[in-house]
Image 1 (cartoon, helix red, strand yellow):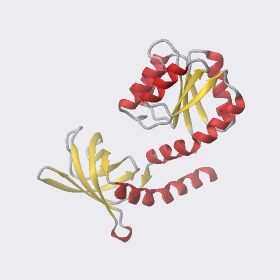
Image 2 (image 1 turned 90 degrees about the vertical axis):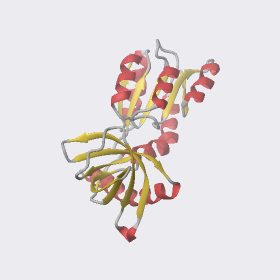
Image 3 (image 1 turned 30 degrees about the vertical axis):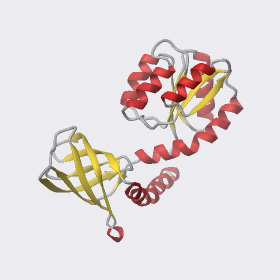
Length: 235
């Protein structure tokens, strides 16, 4: 599955160059020169990585990074800060608010390709975290004294869509017991109700998983995600 990357820079030639190099590397690259438009899109759309110019009309790259790290779909998305060699003070602030990597101007094709290789690991981990696998697993959901049995429709490392006779208010923090079926493996944790689909489907976002439960869930999902990747490449 090709990665999906957003490039934000108010200099059109820089945007065009980065997008061209990423596209040549078989990455789905999208570019914006308007940082306000980028802020809106980042609130609504999930990306595998984001390239942000430090110095832009407000919101600049630092402010955009701060917004991304507060909440939303891209809260853990790898961020590459685009900056000049002489802007060390901006770079320090960028890392403080959550940037992961840096790309120096003037942008060099080979340097960009090297950076893409370095970021591939974090990008792939983040993509897998959001990849949803269609799977039917039993899950028990508890809110206060109410406990209901549901079935998952799809499942990822970040959340699940469940089906059942329950409709807790959006924003509710619930406890769940997810039965993965294989060797009676059970994952327990806390999730937040984030959406409804029709009358019977409820979207949950994981809020708290122990390291052991997160590892169990990952072991369950990774082979299925790899199979999805294999099927996608075959198509």
